[in-house]
Structure formats: structure tokens, C-alpha cells
Length: 399
Ligand SMILES: Cc1cc2nc3c(=O)[nH]c(=O)nc-3n(C[C@H](O)[C@H](O)[C@H](O)COP(=O)(O)OP(=O)(O)OC[C@H]3O[C@@H](n4cnc5c(N)ncnc54)[C@H](O)[C@@H]3O)c2cc1C
Image (cartoon, rainbow, N blue to C red; front, side, top):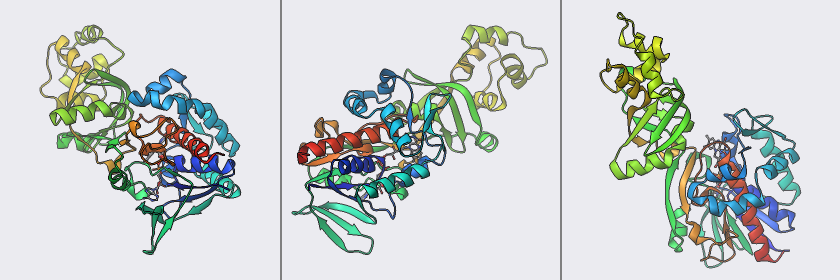
């Protein structure tokens, strides 16, 4: 019987373990934490969004420059396969109003429990509290929590060590150094799907921390995204902010700051807004004018005020409401990010996700250099790459 080691017990590693075990490979999975899948379990706290129901082309477009490399993996194990797999574990899924797909329980706990039981039935051995620390001449080196270390040999290895966000859940990016030392090109790990910093006035932060900016359109360097953003004490977060993450990072890298424009009324044109603003009552204060004529809420009005003195000319005010300037001074640290950009360069792996420099060694999940917005795309790619890496390992093992 061939043996395989899977290092990392997140969605990508557990999926690789399942696929290999089903092919009668003796699988041992190592994880540094006392139990696997901690980030997956946390992802389930706010309502586990496991994949998305949109069509192949728009789905793939979410992966930006990695779409071409991920396309074959999503063809091998796509959203429908993932939904069937969930149902097979007793967790049927449904499509929410936004097109996002959720398990009926909304949580990851029942899924993980059933999954670990299934893996155990398939003979997968899970070694907990074993931190992979690098390679020796004979194989893989693991350091146990009690200070002892073990060397492990295997016929094939799948690494699925994740990125570097939420390090207390296990994935801390500690793998970068040993891989780089073996000559594997790794794009720097950066925070993705993360809030940004804005120097709000104390009055604005005190009053509006936690307030949603509903249905706004954010623009950065020609990229536009519409949705609900959230004011935080130190900046902004939420779907449209995350979706613009790559453009924001680029601007921060180039200029040290990023000028974001907030359109507070994306469904009305500048001319329509001007027309409404022309109906100002003589006694209206600036705030009342904005509230009565174009129905801006208090957070919207104050955001406009944050940018300086209010113009009195209706056309100038309309232009401001369509593009309130907000200066982003940085992003929140990677430890607070939902996911990680960067990772092992695509050029380092072949079509089966085997490292060209380390034959018999495969990589999957967030370790690879792809990124995607929230919406189920992160988990889908983690599962899909896990399946593909395992199939590559099976071919390598001749099973
Ligand atoms: C708060 C939050 C909410 C999220 N919500 C969603 C969502 O709703 N939908 C979605 O699609 N995505 C979501 N994500 C992202 C998603 O959870 C990740 O993309 C996914 O877990 C990545 O899977 P992975 O297997 O590549 O890595 P991980 O899940 O990070 O797993 C890596 C594993 O490797 C282990 N490991 C790391 N280093 C070592 C080492 N040296 N030795 C041994 N083991 C090691 C870790 O302990 C861990 O178990 C969310 C993330 C967060 C933080």
C-alpha cells in the first residue's frame, strides 16, 4: 500500500486526505493545532458561505490573474460537486438571495464533525500538535508540542498549510522560509479581504463606528464595486472594501496612501441629484438639505462633511455626493484579514500542483498565490485545489 502525508488540516488538506484515502492510499495528516480545521470552523461563526451559485465565467473572473490556473481545478471539483459533497455529509446547502451558497445549518461544526468521522472510517490517521518544521535528508521533520521531533518518510506529500491570516488558528505563514530555502519562489504574503485605515475625525468615529454605509459604490483606480461598507473606529470594512483590496494595495504600494471615492447615491445620476438638490428650501441647513432632497442618512451626511466645507451650489454638491473622497492610509494587519494574497508562485507547480523542484510534493489551498473576494470563492478554491493535488499525488503513486 502506498503512503501519503498531508501536512495541514484545513479544508484543502482534509479534502486531499479524503481523496487519497478513497484511492486506498494510507494517509497520515499532521496539524500543528490540537484539532484540525479551526479557521474553517471560525468561518462558520458568521454563517458559513461555502461557495457561490453564479455561472462558470463570472465565478472564474473572481480569481483575477489566477483564473486560468484555477479553471481546470474548478472543472474537476466545482460548486455543484462541493454542494453534493456537503449533502453527502448530511449538510444540504441552499442558495441565498445574493447567490451565495450556505449549508442549511449555516455552520461548519456539523460538517467538520461528520467529515472527521468519515476520514477516520477511511483510515486517515490525524496527528495533532505536530508542527512541520522543514525537511531532513530522510523526509519531513515535525516538532511536537512537548519539544520532541520526529522524522517522517512518505511516498507522496501534500502541503496545505494555508496563508497567514488569523495565525492563532494555525496558519501562520511559518512555511515560507523552508520553502524559500529550497528555491521555491513565494510571493510575499499580504492581507486580503481586510479592512482599511482612514483617519476619521474623533467626532465621526465616536458617532458612526459600526454604522453601515448602505448601497454605496466605491471606486479605486477605475475599479468600482457596489455594496454595503461598514464604518469602523479606524477606517472601513465590508464586501466592497475587500473586493477592491488588490487595487487598494497597489495604490498604497505606489503612493503610500489610496484615494477612495464613495458614491453615496449610485442609483441616481449626477444630473438627477442636481435636479433634486435644486429644490432647497431657504431655511434648510446643509444637513437638512441633503436629508430632504436626496434622502442621505446621518452617516452619509457626516461622511460628506468629513471631506471639508459643504458646497452650496447644487451641481457641486451632487458631484461631491457621487464621489466623496476618502483617504486610505493603510490596511489592517494580516492577523485580522479574512484571507491571504501571495504564496507559492504558479510557475513553481505543474498542472497537478506538484512542485517542479520537489517531485512527489504537492501544494493546495491558500498556500498558492491566488486571491479572491469573500462570497464562497476562498473555500471553493481551497477544496478544489485539495482535490487536484490529491489526484496528482495518486498519479505520482501510480494508484
Ligand atoms: C473570520 C473568517 C471567515 C471566513 N469566512 C469564509 C467564508 O464564509 N467563505 C469562504 O469561502 N472563506 C471564508 N474564509 C476563508 C477560508 O476559511 C480560508 O480560505 C480557508 O480556510 C483556507 O483553507 P486552507 O486549507 O488553505 O488553509 P487553512 O484553513 O488555514 O488550514 C491550514 C492548516 O494548516 C495547519 N498548519 C499551518 N502551519 C502548520 C505547520 N507548520 N505544521 C503543521 N500544520 C500547520 C493549520 O493549523 C491549519 O489547520 C474565512 C476566513 C476567516 C478568517
